[in-house]
Length: 85
Image 1 (cartoon, rainbow, N blue to C red):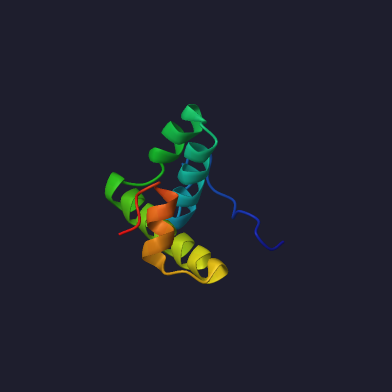
Image 2 (image 1 turned 60 degrees about the horizontal axis):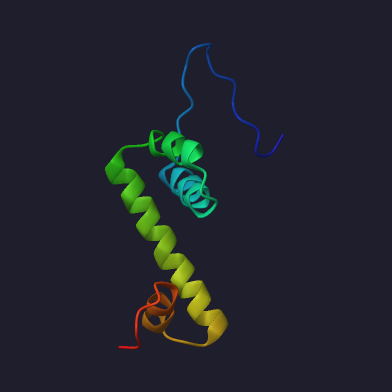
């Protein structure tokens, strides 16, 4: 079955991909779900999570910039409510 998890031995923790962890963490933050945010922060190392979040942010800004026909800098500043540079 596509997308199904492979069986694992009882007591074996699931291993998470850094991008899966980043996506779940950012979504939990956006939904103000503190419990889920704390849980997802434990899935990978802090460095890996930071890398995944950075990659997600870059991809999101690029996608929004293309959608809005604006520069990534303009979109990023707008998302953070910063004045136009």
